[in-house]
Image 1: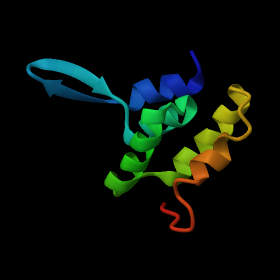
Image 2: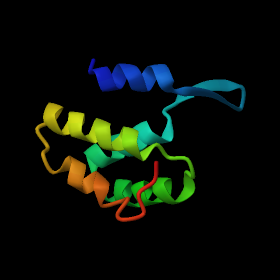
Image 3: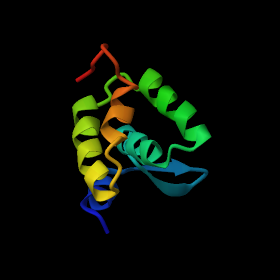
Image 4: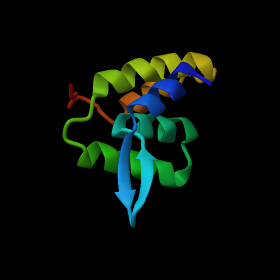
Length: 91
């Protein structure tokens, strides 16, 4: 298991739906998972996460994207992630 995966599991929240407890990743980790996958539906979801989550930790996403780019040998990942934030950089 990657360090990212361990951290993602450790920081996940537990929500209860219809009496069933479900672990849900924080929005930043969900963003990164979708940025790695880059399926058509993920591209829409990425924009939605950025638009809806007001306190998105962009610095965390940028830092993790750099690490994951090395792990997955995807050097384009940080630039792809950055394209969702543009000049309106959030903290």
